[in-house]
Image 1 (cartoon, rainbow, N blue to C red):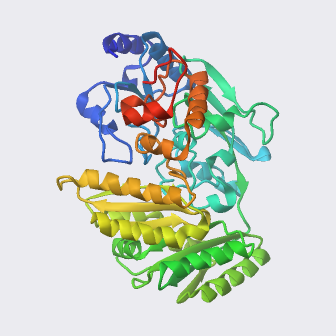
Image 2 (cartoon, helix red, strand yellow; image 1 turned 90 degrees about the vertical axis):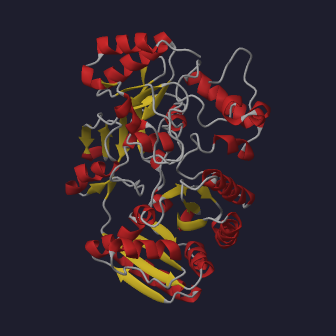
Image 3 (tube, rainbow, N blue to C red; image 1 turned 60 degrees about the vertical axis):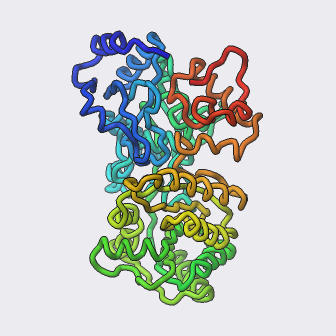
Length: 483
């Protein structure tokens, strides 16, 4: 489809300040990918709104000129969700960074989508509150992006993911209409369109104001570090802890490759280099409860074969133990020129067998894979290390990635836990869902966006993006085209 970009740019310039438009090719290259860097496509034009009114103007212009658009936050997504891989206007929300309203009496805060995740806690920490969802990229990822992907984080085991903490959304629909989804309360009798929008990866519109639930900071926090001589032993510790009824705030595992990368990154040995795996367990709540839970967790780790245990009770010591997990992706980036991070979910009981399969696939494809993951809910993050300058390496990586996702599905899991489908996994969605399921998803998308202009070609498989297999997966109503 041919779009009149000059006419669109002319109308945008009439309504927005000059600084809101990015037109120079060298500047547009800054937006050629998100955190998944293997595929790159610079957008033809980008716009940076600052208010809901600005976004409404932009989408009205897109509607008038029948131009698709792609929303982008901080660009830290890991599924190609913000990739402009077919002609579309890029709408960047990074200048929408205001905390609009803090209501501590009702434990809520309203923010614009460009507000950084960690800023929310910073804004209310002095009053004893915090925002629970904490992706590893929380110091750079935006709340709008978290809503688009329904992001999780270390504490999702106990506190859930983004959808559990969003009470209301102000949304600009693809035709420029501004509407409210959710009423800002914990419970509502209306159809939960708020829940449908969260995790829709920019395919239903753009959120411009987000009301978040705040939690009281716990009285006491302990962090345990247990190291093991095998991944199976670490997995057994996770199984026994959850089976006995303990509910940690978070449980994370890192394998030997990751341990050594982090220690090298720090320049000192924070974690034991010879361990096959380390398990981080955070327990929070009332002091007596945390003390009893920590002692029980230590007992179960020893029974599972833990070689050593450390417990941090001071906030600074706790932060040090978590620092390695939060920096793991950066650390691994220093030992490999390129990496490709995947995101699959498996039942906790299947962790040992799935990890063994990933090791076998790594050897079969001749590529090194590092593993770190949210062990408490079986959310794996296998990191494929490779060199993009090696001919044919990119395709080998994609083949290995697909094989890993197939293993997760065969174990009764999912192709994504928190990174979304985006462009990266859209051609695998029919591995999980039948044609009727995909048709229902398409109908929901059409209800919000009849002309399919919002983040075109993402999430759902289409003939344009996935070839003939998509024609068998999705049968749209007559006259409806998927861009």
